[in-house]
Structures are given as structure tokens and as C-alpha cells.
Amino acid sequence: MALRERDLWVFGYGSLIWRPGFAYAERRPARLAGYRRRFCMTSIHYRGTPERPGLVLALDACAEGECHGIAYRVEAAAAEAVHAYLRERELVSYAYDERHVTVTLDDGATVEALAYVTNTAHAQYCGHLSLEEQAAVIAAAVGPMGPNHEYLLQTEASLVALGLEDPELRALAALVRGRLPGAPRDSVP
Image (cartoon, rainbow, N blue to C red; front, side, top):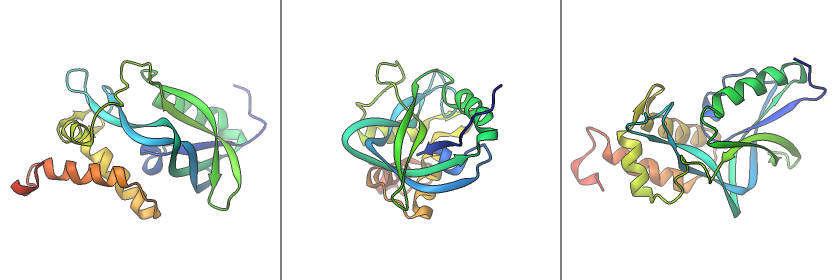
């Protein structure tokens, strides 16, 4: 495998925030314009099964949207290995498209970063679900990586810890909490 000549930037907006799975030289808050973070992809490999799919986050194109997340800088010497790892992790069913996007770092500088965005033509795309429908799926699904709700709640907690706002994700998390076993009966939508 040839060594890259420059560092690789990777944009994380979901589980890559709290479980990147690779070594990095730098981790910075970043913003990506033109996309929204949404639970718009079914998960049949990690947070659900083919018989009972879960939902995972994807970047969904939206002209007026923006997504706050984390940009990781991977040193050039490790870039090829990290890229291969990310392809194995993120392209398991090719429901994501691999793209290079321009992200704005917390100091206003911009960098080209690798990101995985939803493939709206893929059978796993489900961008039509309401928050209530998403909550019903997420509260019930379990896959090899664990309960689907853990993925949502860990992402929410990570965003809060970073001081990043995502009102839709926060509203979805509240709906899911109300559906979990032990939730007060009157909080179930």
C-alpha cells in the first residue's frame, strides 16, 4: 500500500464522534454546510437485523442545512490504513457514498474531509419517516452492536458534551426514552 503524501481529514457526525476506531493526530469541532444529520438509513448489520432493521445516522443533502460534528486529522503515514478501515466499517452494504466535502473548523479554517453521506437511491434509505416512526424503530431494534437506542443516546450525549446543538436529535431522543421499558406510562407517545 502506498503512503499518502498528505494528511487525511475525516468528518464524524454520529458514532465516529464517540467511537472513531482509529488513531488521529488532531480532533476538532467542525461544521458541514449543505447536509443534515438524520436517522434516514436502516441498519441491518450493526443496530438491527434483516428481520428487524434499526436506524442509523446519515448525512442527508439539504441546501439550507448544516451539520456540526468532529473533524479528525490523520497523519499521512496512517491515512491509507485509516481509509481502508473506514471503508470496511462504513461501506458494509454500500448504503453510504464516500465523498470529500469542505468542512469549517472551529477556528474558521476550511479543510477537505472524507465523509460518508446517504445514498438516497439505496434500498436502505428511509428519509420519509417521521420522528415518531423513527422513535418506534429505534426503541425496539437490536443488532450485533447492541440496542439501537444506545447508538442514539450515545450520540446525543457526545454532542451535548461538545456543546453542539441538534434539536431534532434531542427531540428524537426524548421520544425514544419515552418508549423504553421502565418509562413512565404517560410519557409514551
